[in-house]
Structures are given as C-alpha cells and as structure tokens.
Image (tube, rainbow over all chains, first blue to last red; front, side):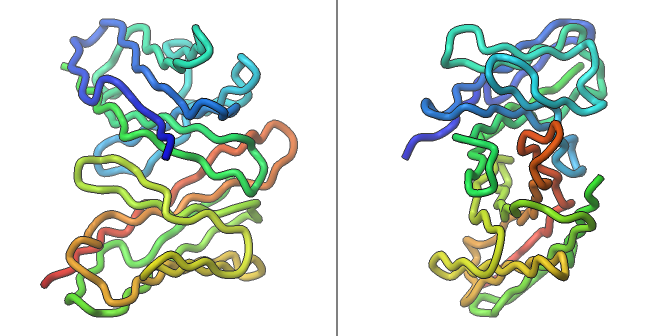
Length: 115
Length: 113
C-alpha cells in the first residue's frame, strides 16, 4: 500500500540554523499538510497546501516557516532560524481530496531536536 | 474553534478485556479520524467516519453526529494494542477550510498480559 515517507527520521540542529524537513506524499494525492507535536502535547496543525500554494495556516506558522513542493513529488517544510521551542515531532500528511470521504495519510514523522 | 476532548487520558486493561475510548467535540464536523500512535511516534490512521459505525478486525468506531461524540472500542484486547489512541476532527468544509485536522490529547492505553 502506498505510504507517505518522511526524512530524516531524526534531525539535530543548533539554534539559529536553518532546517529542511522532507516528505514524499502519496503520488496521486493533491492536498498536503504539516502538523507538529511538542513532547507531551497535542498534535497541532501548521499548514495545508493545495494547487502549489498555501491554502490555510495556523498562527504557529509565522515568517520563520515556509513550505514548498519543488519538483512535483517532494513536499518540504523549512524553518529559517530555529528556536529551542521548535523542538517537536513534525508529521507530514496527504490526502487525495479535502472532502469528508478522503482520509489523510500520515508519515512516520521527523523528530527535530534544537540544541 | 473546535475543542476536542478524549476520555480517559490513561487506560490500563488486562488482556482480553473490552476497551472503550471516548471523544467529544464542540463544533459540527465533516469527518472524524481515529489514529494510533506507537512509542516511536509514528501515526497510523485506523478509521475515518462521518456517520454510523465502522469495524475493522477487533476495532469498532462509532459516531453520533447529533451528540458530537465518538467512541473507539477494542474487543479482546491484546498487549500489542498498547499505544496512544488519538481522535482528530475535520471541520466542515467552507470558507478557507481545506481539511485541516484538530486533535484530541490522546488516550494512553496499556494492556497487560
């Protein structure tokens, strides 16, 4: 069964450095999402992406964050200047559509540790 | 903004027991996911439902749209069912909603042999 893949599984970065988290969504999916989960907290929505542009973003998704689909297969999340509080598990998800009968499929996540 | 609450937060069971995890939400939705999160952190989708009931193996999910409530049942629980179970809702489409999910805090299930 097709799946969403995320790399790397664990990323350790110095505070202030840029980091790029990568995701390969399922190939015929059109809607893409990033979520994050700070240790011990709920999973939170960051951003949704459709038709090569951001369709919705949360208040967490400030100017330090950006998303891109550079080549039609990868979907990336960039954090420009990381902070300690960016340490979290980041999940990518994709779905064929946004209608109620189209489930989201999740990757295994990237654990981001900011030192 | 949809508030999603799960109960209980922690659940311990003996192998073979019937388990129920509850989820309630505050605003009408288009669909509800039940997700399973393993100790390594990965998330697996168990069910997505918008009405009625779904069954997959020993897992059963129900939803009552009028009462804004869903339950996940596990029959004949097994130690391998130990995980965090998360309810997540998709708000009704419209405006700028493109299917984002709002998550509950999760229920930590431990099944002892």
